[in-house]
Amino acid sequence: MSELIDSAQRRKELLKHMILQLHDGTAPEEVRPQLIRLLGQVPYGEVVEVEQELIAEGLPVAEVLRLCDIHAAALQGAISQEGAKVAPPGHPVHTFQQENLALRWELEQLSKAYDEVAGLADGAETLGALDRIRVRFNALMDVDKHYRRKEYLLFPHLEKHGISGPPTVMWGKHDETRALLRGAFDALATAGFASVEALRGLVQTAFRPASDAVGGMIDKEEQILLPMCLDTLEEGEWLEIARQSHEIGFCLFDPTVEWLPEGAAAVPAANPAVEGRIQLPSGSFTAAELQAVLNTIPFDLTFVDADDTVRFFTQGKERIFDRNRAILGRKVQFCHPPASVHVVESILAAFKEGAQDAAAFWLTLKGRFVHIEYFALRDDADAYLGTLEVSQDLTAKRALQGDRRLLAWQGDAAKDVTTDGAAHD
Image 1 (tube, rainbow, N blue to C red):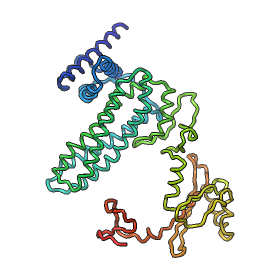
Image 2 (cartoon, rainbow, N blue to C red):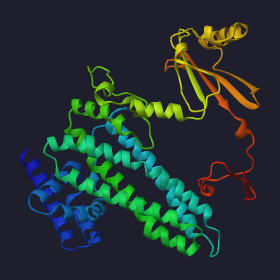
Image 3 (spheres, one colour):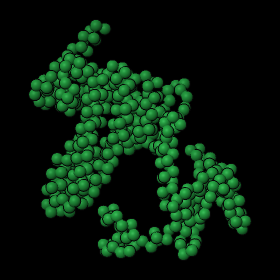
Image 4 (cartoon, one colour):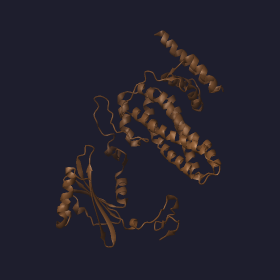
């Protein structure tokens, strides 16, 4: 056992010496062969311990942050994952890993776009390549939720276990990456009809540094942070992280499995009455926000529960059909003229039996084209929850012609833009 301890201590001292060499200016390409020759593969836990010790011994966090990418490059491929635990689906670490897979795919598509730009002939049109790069960066901006779950949910638990240095350094790298992503977006916003030469310059100065930063963070997580966290945190801590993750949201991946430690009860992630927010799987609202959303959407909604009772209707500024609170709590059959009740009954019966999921109607009412549709609402087990009635005045939309793209908007909602670019009332 003492031999193993001595071996681990010797590796850590050599690793520390290597990082200090980098601090003194030795290039990583000179250090890397030495590291691999002397150490073989470095267990991921020792990398964390060395970083923590260097900070404790007085190496400024800012300097560790500066060296982080350099010594990560030197260690690339030399960090052993032997003995690392595997997170089951739904576990916070599994979610982080699936998000990283999605991020890597976006980075691969960006790399192809960069190659496309490199292969463009001088004077070629660049808008298509710019659009493809823009789409990928729109997706990469989602990484902020990934970083915030680490910063606000994961790092505090590491600090409770006495691991404070690496989270501090990694948070700093998050902020660097965010700044690079913002810079890439600023470049995209001003690129316009950039020449091929100008676009190549933006790839090197703005786009590639940002995407490389995202990729570098993925490597640090996969090689060091996540395996170390699985070794360090207890199941109760992971459960706390899992239950709070929905408040922040997820990055390019939506977990479909709920993970629970053995013996833990399945309870909501948060108490809406305490938090003051109505929690849904894809986000949350305050009651005022939800009311504003429902009353702003450009159509009328009426909800009828599984017992055919009217429970809710929206109150938008321009209503198609009159509604008042007197209908709440009434059977929906009593809210229709006797001549059409049998049709309502038939629709509801088909929804309850699972034979139909929607029924649509349209008519001209006072010169307006009105579309009415009923939708069956079902839970995850396909059990019937009720019916949603959606009514829309589509008169103006039916009259639209040509295109009106986002960049053509000038604040005049009364105008639309046709394909030939002419604006008219």
